[in-house]
Length: 419
Image (tube, rainbow, N blue to C red):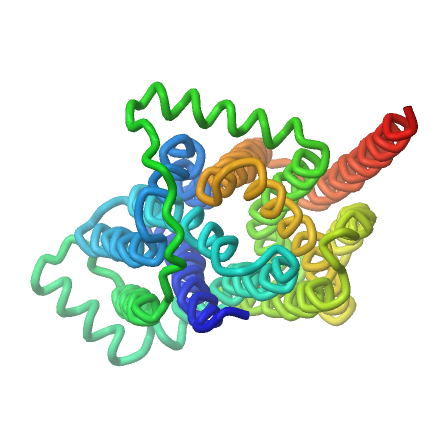
């Protein structure tokens, strides 16, 4: 890997770790304020909204300046989200501010990887980056669980901060103030690590800045990537994967509370098991699946859907642990080669920043749609087991259709080459 590549991984891991821990803390704040359960998925909805609404501008922004510098600035925007919470901003609005920083951070991060790492090493590089991203999502949930756990909230330091805020008529008077302080330090560490991330030296021609021109440019880039055979298929898989992953993050927390009888903080710890599986699966894919054989991992998506059904049916802890780890491993095996293939095709067809912005738009639009559907099903009080089982079956069916479409495209290409 290029010099200081692993510092890039460490910086983005720390920043994403804080993003995901902040989700659990804001969920706890909503519960403190007596908000209904369907508000929880709206946190992720608000966080993701910037990825979709600002997608036409995020790619050109990432290409217009050194990406390492942009990543550092976006850590500052995330800190503003925590500052808003401390000043009494609604948790959903504050998490949306953090999402704005994350949305601009993403194309810079992925684009920098494609600029620093040669094509033959992209799968291995994505093994590192996907382990760090998915690991941060799951371990961040574990960290969030620790930050909202009763021992910390009842500690002398948390109670002192709470009493001081009450005495000073501070907008946010909560035992969770100490947790927000911990998240501030985590974002500060990410900013410190960011200072050592190298600049690739790659510069792109200046793009038109007119809003309508940017929208037209983005629409053309989106259409071009979808119409590419390998690019469109890999984009479909990653779009489905991230929508599924975001929804399952909430569904599994609810499953652990309702079916296993765990508290929220304990349910968050349980996701470390999934994180270990993801790390193992992503490392295996990065080591064993070359870029030209990325399509071979598609059946893992069918298996992932089946595992979701099996997990939903469990009501005791011990049998659930290997299933959670296996689901994580299968997800890691699926997403790393697909993401590498998508980045490779995107970089060939578009610029690095634009291809990542197109990818982010589609994947996060999937997250918005699936989270909105999940929140609606919770609001109408659909039972958990049918909800998760139906979700898993839908994932298997969708992946089966993508496998069929991919093989049909291969046959068509082979016949065309003979003419």
